[in-house]
Length: 265
Image (cartoon, rainbow, N blue to C red; front, side, top):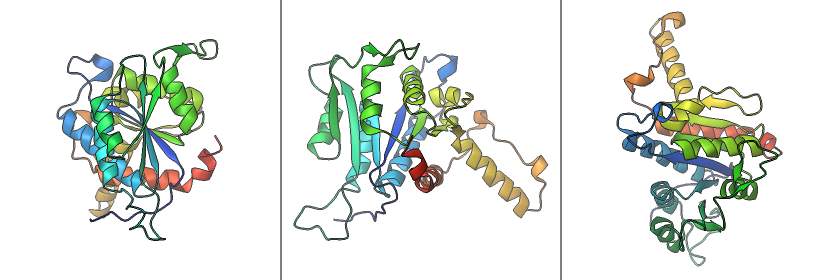
């Protein structure tokens, strides 16, 4: 069996992933981009590979399609059986999926498949749709989100696509993990695009895909003898080809270098 090589720069650390495909009828705040399924899936896969390759853990709500996708990627980094394991091999790539016990008698079929394959750890939160700490947070926090974040202490959040539920994930993260970075793939549309325009003194929101594409554009202009002042700007409407693996690796490199700082948040 072929296994991907792994490092350990994120070992013992969690990243909160909030992602989904916006509905076609989404409002203007959560606009669905052209080719949303492909773009969002590629971004999620790239992030998962970058995190798992460094021994990190991904935490996410039980959005069926995303749980299945991340679980499938986790299988690429699955630890060998005890008999096959060498002293140099790292622990299994970990996925923590949180689902509300108040919405159904049993977990989603997709989450169960990944759970039975040993690719994810499934967490059921009874009354997950209830609101708590309303006196501390005017918007209220869903119990599911509160437990998900408090139990896993993610050092960063990544938002890809999404709609109102992903926006709520961001609000909960910003409230409970003040100072921790939030990376948004703004060009994937949806909640990620709307969060990208937010300025917050406590949480640094990075439009990471736009930043990197503009950096690449600047380097290209300099290489060709161009003027940075006249380099082309990234227009979200044009949907450029986006190097998701590069962006995901950039995120991992950043949070790896500063993990000691964020782990104390």
